Image 1 (cartoon, one colour):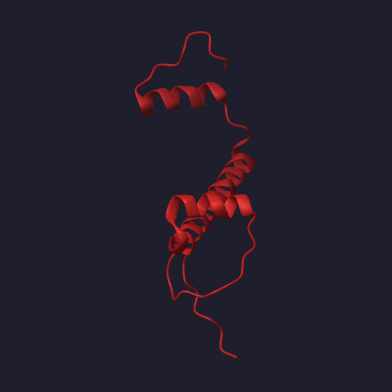
Image 2 (tube, helix red, strand yellow):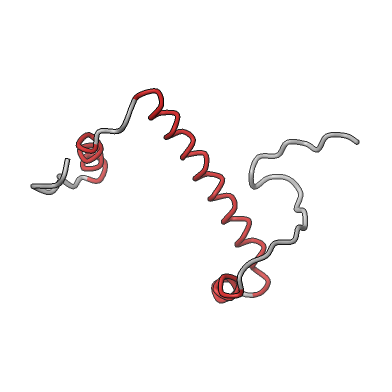
Amino acid sequence: MAEAPDFPPGDGPSSGISVSLTAGTLHAIRERVGKRGVSAYLEMAAQRQIERDGLDELLADFKAANGPVDPGAVADKRAKLTSNPPEAGAAA
């Protein structure tokens, strides 16, 4: 049997699978996207989770190489990125 091509998330042909969801979760999805939008919604949710997993791996690698993050440095960077100065008395 030939090996399947390696597609990145979001690319390649669609393939049907069976998934199990709780009734409440399925109801909430259908309320948002309708009955015919469930597959597309789950595809996007899976892609977001894959991105988050990748970010978690990058953060773990960074922490392993550089040690724990300095909360004060993070607050300073956040303030610069958002143009909001850190609050006085914020925990460092």
